[in-house]
Length: 202
Image 1 (cartoon, rainbow, N blue to C red):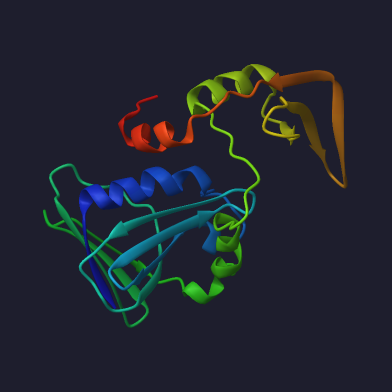
Image 2: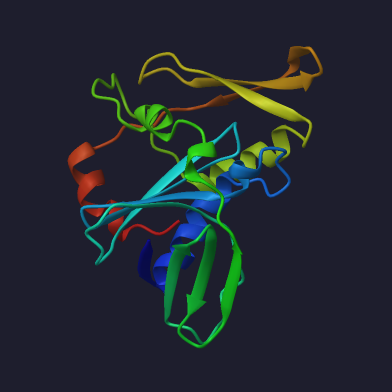
């Protein structure tokens, strides 16, 4: 099995999927990115068991290709990359001569990607919420620490979202009532938002 990519495509896969990768995860397959090429479209999927992300890109390959991709250092001078699996080994070869070789982890050890992908395809959505991710991250940094999670409580599109802190403990979990945040909704012009979404920078 072999697939060719532009380095820019690989960088984008690493950038997006890196948000849901945990290199220290006890389950080895969860340290990798699940790649599947089908009908000229490459699907890249990653999960650390808590979060999942997916991105797609066009490729020349029309044949079916599935592998678990590790994160490797991308050389600055390379423009193309080839990913090949042969005899249980994976070769990641860049156009400038840099090459990585390692044992190929069988994709069958990965979680049921098709099952997880169902969460990305919801036919009936009651309403949509738009947020600026940088502003949301800035708010969360001041709201919770590394040992805390958050609970989002949704009402309707006209009601604010209620956020509580959620402390994860061994064998139990506790919602703290001493800290609470309201995320106020904004009215969306869906036609305008969809037309200009690609032009926006945050």
